[in-house]
Image (cartoon, rainbow, N blue to C red; front, side):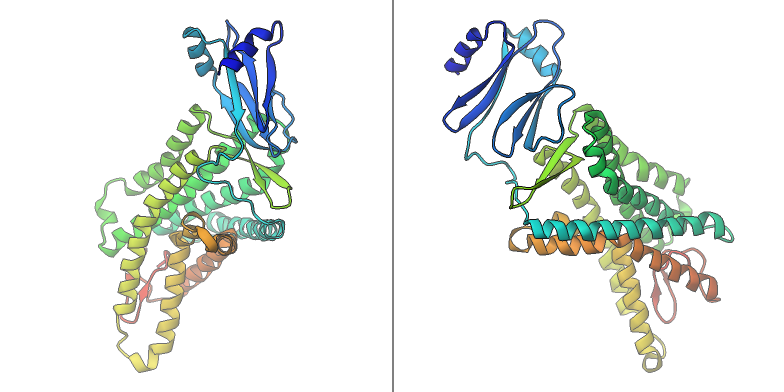
Length: 388
């Protein structure tokens, strides 16, 4: 610190300088006495540290981006501070440790994601078209909740597909907006999984009709809750560029949350709450499905098992259980879990469209279907179609 202080005195008319002492590298910059602004410092893949201007080149390969907000600069000046410095010490690890993925795995996962998200976008659009323009009669509460989930997933897939293109525009403000949009749609998708579980839970005890303004409350919670989280992260300037590195030195840039601790605390914490509730509802519903015996067991055993299996698979998709592969997988199973997660979730919109189409067809063609219950027990099986 004494050397850095001496270096400030040696700067003279210069405002910044690079620091180098063996493997230790960094930069130092004088703080303006008036009208302090934010300071952006990049760390490249070779641990080269540079101060960025407002129109910095986003093509530069960097592994970290440090932003010192103007409020911190103002506070430092008020306390007689005269400089800011960012120093990288080799061998000091992050929390969590940033893990490189192999180039082959990265290419495969990128291809699977692109194809899956593209298919999901198409079929979710078809489902929304069918609901808005082809649907006959008034939609049930369960259908309305499912359609909101479709909207959230459609915007999530779309924002993910255009994310890298926006990151390559070299416009930091556009990248922040892109990161906030994708984060909002992801949290909205999680929240609508939660809403699906709540509706299913209520229908097990036939409570929705007893709740005043039931759907209005569901809509407010479904779209409002993630907005509160994203607004807080925007206010605290937690969106920016993130670089995904492969083991051969290549990298890919996207707009997201650069701080790994914030990402884990917000996203894993948010999904953990959703997962605990949705999984509990899932177990409760599956228990009812497998414990109800058909009256003519011998004649209907095969068909009942098939119907119940499809119902369970539909529940896994509706409640977003498969997202647990991404958030709760570590160690040697990390890369395999990436493949499972990518396949199941990038194609989730396509799978849900098939479920939507089959359920809608069965509901309109089955004269014995019951009302609009999200989980209706019949004499033969437990149905989990939202269109019955």
